[in-house]
Amino acid sequence: MREIDAKLITETVARLAVEANCLLPGDIKNRIERARTEEKWPTAQGILDKIIENYGIAERDDMPICQDTGVCCVFLRIGQDVHIAGDITEAVNEGVRRGYAEGYLRKSVVGDPLRRVNTGDNTPAMLYTELIPGDRIEITVAPKGFGSENMSRLKMLKPSDGVGGVKAFVLETVEQAGPNPCPPIVVGVGIGGTFDKAALLAKKALMRSADERSADGYYAALEDELLESINALGIGPQGFGGRTTALAVNIETMPTHIAGLPVAVNINCHVTRHKSAVI
Image (cartoon, rainbow, N blue to C red; front, side, top):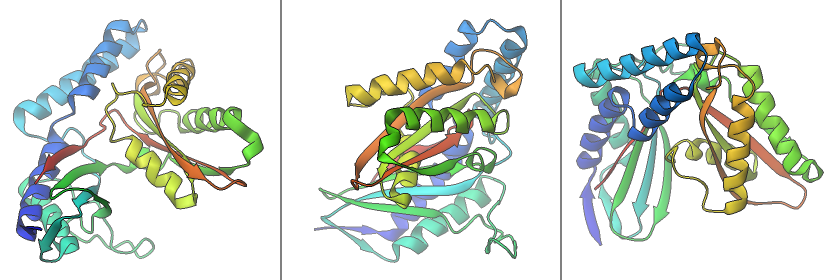
């Protein structure tokens, strides 16, 4: 049994919160830059140029890529041979609290969904935990802006709707979102499980590299097909038209009930932020 002090979790979360907000992942940068070389519409080219300039400034000057520094989604994959000395939830929240203060990041969390009073420190984090073999903790911090989160949807399809129903729902969701989630977007799709599990699958799908296709060939082909169909919608960067509406479609699945076909679509803007560390 390995003991890990909760203070180490706090320090790691604080660091990752700042890095995630200021440093766009390489896979997303590569997709944007590739899209710029392939884009034919002059207006879309100009928008992509500004996006590239923006994340370059953020990286150079240690500034947030976007003014919406998001609600902090923290994924912990905890080794079953680890003992955490301290309160893990408070350790994560303290890390968010410190990171958002030290990084001068906007605090966007309200303490109650209806009374709307800002907590002042961007806590609490949205915390997801999973037990895995081993004696390490894998931490991923993913700030999620709500311009894109608000465009996400979940639908309980009938099994008879099949893959056609899934494709239609994903395309309908993206088309209804239009320019609101600041395209080009990354589309996370969760299929299966239950009402809540499908949504979590969609969120986790956004953590996968845009360059990594599903390990299941059937779903890898579906990812490619959906990406092509989404880009054919012509929404384009920031909604001004063009061939670059989405950078990637990532699908995650799990078993479900014989009577159900839950499907969730979690949309992320081109600032698809996440940073990870292992302790």
